[in-house]
Image 1 (cartoon, rainbow, N blue to C red):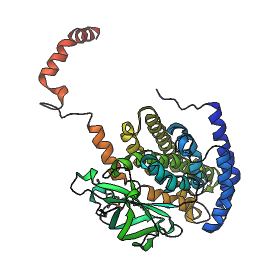
Image 2: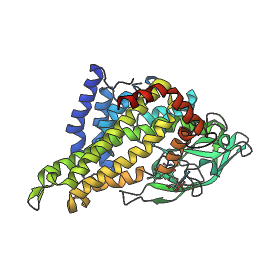
Image 3: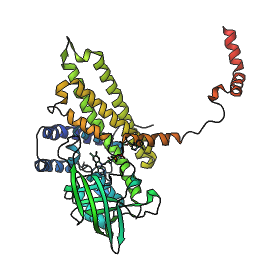
Image 4: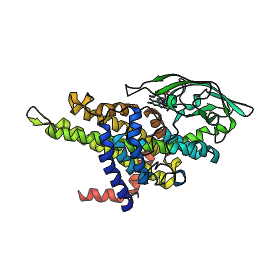
Length: 424
Ligand SMILES: Cc1cc2nc3c(=O)[nH]c(=O)nc-3n(C[C@H](O)[C@H](O)[C@H](O)COP(=O)(O)OP(=O)(O)OC[C@H]3O[C@@H](n4cnc5c(N)ncnc54)[C@H](O)[C@@H]3O)c2cc1C
C-alpha cells in the first residue's frame, strides 16, 4: 500500500515553505508590480529558496535540483500552488523554463548543458517551447514545420503559435519534422534556436482570457539556420523526449492545482460562515452546504489521485503511470475549475471583481482544461488504457443469464438453496 507520511526532516522543509509563503510571497500579491519590479522584488526571495535547498526541486541533484521524488514534490507543490503565478518562479520551477530544463537534462550533451541548461537554471537565460501550430495542437503528428539538413547546418521553415514568451526568450526549443518518411512518432526532432537568429519572426502576441500582457506568440520560422550541434537528442527522437518531459511536468501542474483549489475552498468556507442573507448565515443554507460538501469530496479525490500518481511514478517509473497522470490531468483541472466557480458564486459581485484573486484564478483554471493536452485527449488515453484490461465477451450477454451457467450455478449451490428453503 502507499503511504503519505513524510520524514520529520522533510516536514521541517514543508513548514519552512508554509512560513515563507505567508511572510514573503502572499504580501507581494497585493502589489501591482511591473515585470521589472517583480524581478527585482523576487531576486532576494529566490536566494532564500536556494539557501534553504529548495530550488528547482523537480530536477535531479546533479542538475542543481534536490532529487526529492514525486511524492515529496507533490507535498511541496501543494503549498507553492496556493500562489500559482508568483511562487513557481521563486522556487525555480516556472514553465516553460522548468520543462525546457528537463528537456535539456534528458537529451542535452555535456556541451549543450553547459551552454543552455546551467544558465537556464540560474535564471540568466529565458526560454520558450515552440510546438503548437495553427494546424497541429493536440495531435503532434500533424506538425508540418520542417528542418532540412544543409551541410553543417539545419534550415528551419514553419509556422507556430501559442509559443509562450517567444518574444522575450533567449532560446526557443522548436519541434520540427526531420524524417518525413518515418512513422509519425519518429518523424520529429527538437532544436535549440537562438531567439535572435535571422528568420525568427514573431508575427504578434496573442492574449488569453484577458490575463495580463499577451505573451503567447505566433512565430514564423523563415529559413532559420542553426548549426548541427543545436539538434537535441537523436534525429527523429523528439516524441520520446517530449513524453519523458511531459509526464512528470503535467503532474506538477496538478499538484499546484491542489493548493490553488484549497485557497478558493478556504475563501468559500469563510464567506459561508460570515455572510448573512434572509435571516441566516449562508453556511446554514442547504445549497451552500452542498457546495462545501461537493468541493471537499472532489478535492479529496483529486488529492488522493495526485498523490497516487506521484507514488506510482516513484515506484514504477513514468511510463507505468500514464493512466494515473492522464486521469488526474483532466479530473484535477475540472475540480479546480468547479471549486473556484463556487467560491466566486458565494462572494456574489465581490467574487467576480478584481478586489479578490478569484476571478484571475478562475481564468487560469479555465485554461488548465486546454493546455498540456485538452481534457478530451486525456480521457481518450485513460479509456484506451483501461480497455486494454478487458476483452470482448463471447457468446450471449449478460453471461450470468446464459442458461448453461445458470444451471451450473444452481447445481453448485444446490445444497445451500435447499437449506435456505428448509429454513423457511
Ligand atoms: C495559455 C496557453 C499557453 C500555451 N503555451 C504553449 C507553448 O508555450 N508552446 C506550445 O507549443 N503550445 C502552447 N500552447 C498550446 C497548447 O498546448 C494547445 O492549445 C493544446 O495542445 C491544444 O491544441 P489546440 O489548441 O490546437 O486544440 P486542438 O488540437 O484543435 O483541439 C481543440 C479541441 O478539440 C477537442 N479534441 C482534440 N482532440 C480530441 C480527441 N482526440 N478526442 C476528442 N476531442 C478532441 C478538444 O475539445 C480540444 O479542446 C498554449 C496554449 C495556451 C492556451
